[in-house]
Length: 230
Image (cartoon, rainbow, N blue to C red; front, side):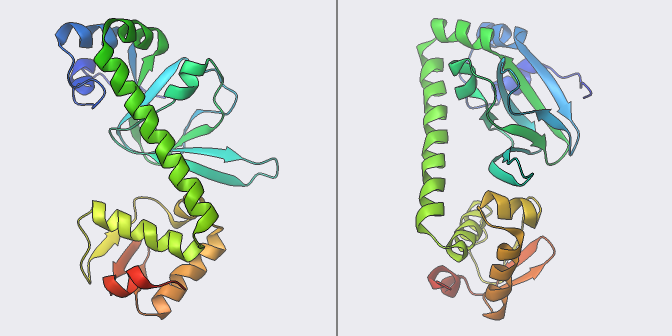
């Protein structure tokens, strides 16, 4: 890992968790914050490693994943800019239960547990923001369980394309969606094998709902895609 010289307070002040803090509060958090520049493919931590704080992504992407004894990987979450991870484990005083690896060259901030606990005692608003972040993460995980349990693989893929398209303002016929990571990573994130994921894309293509070119997917008929059930 290499380090990049940055003004920590400038980055902290742009994050939702810290953006209402004054200069003195940011200075206190910055004392317990370190920057980490992680290259693509580099492991940030492994399952079982001690957790001494939480991370937030400034740019890049980090995948959180389990690996089975047979070596297969299940991606739990992909963390992008402005989002954080590790808070729950930090509060529980438990080791990490997932591994973290950079999917791209990534700049992160690591905020030490001691700095977080000290600020929680000083600032009730900070405590509420921290609770809100943990609640959003829990809600997202529950939605994932619901999708894996009640929705077919095809519905999961379509749901992702529709949601990602909405985030990218791409809900029009002929709009191209550039996937933010590889198809193998996306398949794991949707709890699909790469082969199953490829079959779903092929089926959607055969039905003239999408067109696939590498990591670029063009939605040909948004209304029919919404209604398609495979």
